[in-house]
Image 1 (cartoon, rainbow, N blue to C red):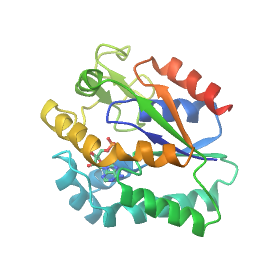
Image 2 (image 1 turned 135 degrees about the vertical axis):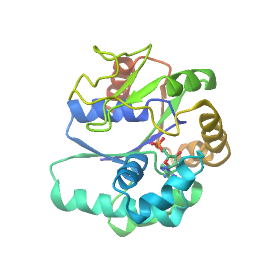
Image 3 (image 1 turned 30 degrees about the horizontal axis):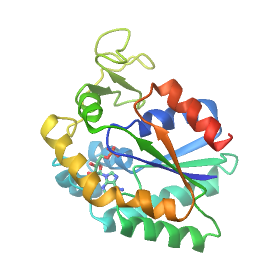
Length: 218
Ligand code: AMP
């Protein structure tokens, strides 16, 4: 089952993806995580992507689409028992959505569901600026809503938590503007295809996961 998690930055896509992976047979393709991995390993892709990411701009499609297919084809080859593939943070433009449709068709596959996180803008800024992430295992926390047991330390693996470079107020506003101008058109794109499911992104991670399971019947 191929599922897209669609929503603005800070809506809870990554948090839901982690919950699904903990509880179901699922694997995630998160383009933002792939770029950050390349940045920390100082690859050529990482250096090019960083320029855009630090400003909150979108990385160009020619650097994005191929790496999604590399990840997808690897999953198909290695982990055939993972029956849910989660696209997190991709597609973000109509061109990316068309490329995804085309590539899926070429592989005899399809996008089964698009989970849209419905959420107010004020909540996003608070969530993102307070977000802290584990650079080792990817666990996410919030300094007020979901603090780690020990301040600044990952509950899961004990690594020192960091704040993402692009999680500051100025960059967040740009990321939200870009979401509105380039990504939100995908809501109608997938609604027209009859595969869009809305969930309330303002709810707690547990409630969001429950709504996801109920609405998808998984
Ligand atoms: P995320 O981790 O999903 O919040 O993504 C962080 C940043 O990575 C975004 O602000 C973009 O700069 C870049 N990025 C992630 N996914 C994409 C994508 N599908 N297309 C273009 N840029 C992306």
